[in-house]
Length: 265
Length: 310
Image (cartoon, rainbow over all chains, first blue to last red; front, side, top):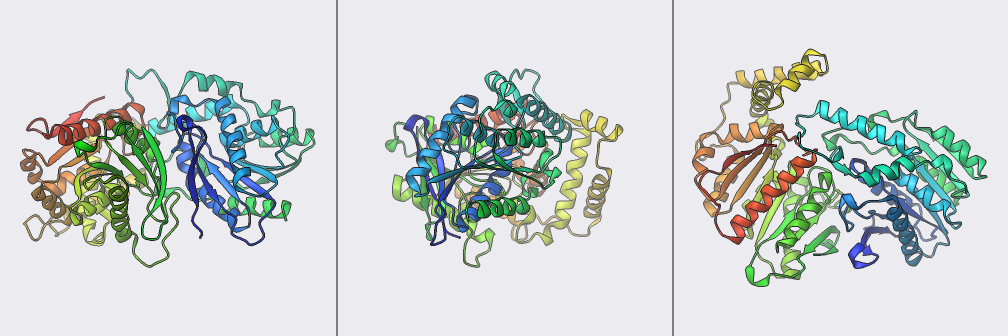
């Protein structure tokens, strides 16, 4: 496996950490991938899977940039500073950085959970995104908030811990959820996107009842060429204390790779 | 505060982020803080704790480095046959080498949670540049190279853990309610209880005489003798606490009077510090300790076993 190139990009006070995977085949594909992580506990949980997906795509000839959003991972800012508008700007910066580093003419955004929603929202606001992979994207922010609260209750019930009586903040499995972010999420609704975010879209569903079918129909209604695959992995979506038990969903990674290889043959 | 990402190590394959204070304190000779992976969680740490800790300590003058061991996070897997347990010690030394080369620092404090705590202690034993260890929820020696030989100790520690959780912990009422309302995995509970009883009935004793004692205790004794301060922090809900207290036995009380040993228990917290207040308490304990030990040069009192409440 070739090593990656980690670097900071953007203004120094708001720098973002990116990891660039150069394509590992002689003939590079004409499409570069920008990978958008999920947030909060899902970021920690799925970092390994995202890294492996990036490595798999690079072995298949795709240049890949994965990056930490502002206030997340190794990027600048505190968790409390995260806002959806800011993260959409981060995606635009990451796309510019990817164009700068790769010779590929086309861009495909790959996003997991809230990262998928942000990718779709960012792409719907511009016309230069060719492909998109939405892996269990958050479709309705209100529903997502309910899911997060349920997961937090699950954690409180199962773990050996005691909440503080004086805690005034909203927290979800180790991460703060500010009032501003709650407001942003309440407004998030992918079914309200009015322009197709990309020409070709893969929707990966690993958990039922996430409105993925509605999203697929909506995107098809916007004249996007959509493929929807169902690869159930319900164990991902429960609270887990011991992260060493987290598995990388290779079946999903392979499915993404197969679709990308076919579309960008 | 400034952060830079780097690739370092013999194979130039390890990925790390160095956090520098806004104004370097070259004259203070403060050690650098090196943060080690917890299990397979990458360098950002559980709940982004490593990032928060590095930035808070940078604000008080400490240089910090978080990095990924080979095969974890952004560092690719090694291509040789060196076992993971050995390579982690070597790679921790490579991180210190990097800070020595680029920042001119020759003293280090290693910080690790769970398996990272075990690696921090073991590296400290083989490298004289280590000037302190923060071992959080240390369980590393439970599954160490002598893991098989440790099984009766582990079983006894688990029994002690379940007893404490059920009868004396601050969340005992919640746990009894769970048990009564059927929200407990009885199968795994009975299995753990059975293992614990087996440990109790085992003819093996916990070795305690010098020369025949548990490797964990031997390592700790060597660090204390060398004058290396070690801060143990345990969440109340963590089973490593029972293991550490059981293996150290009365020596822990004796060492309490030394500057080199401190055990802090954070009441109401779980293994991963999943609640915000517990993360803040953890960071506060580490920062206060670092200030006391390395800035003022004293441990700030004689009794170093303390319990922190919510």
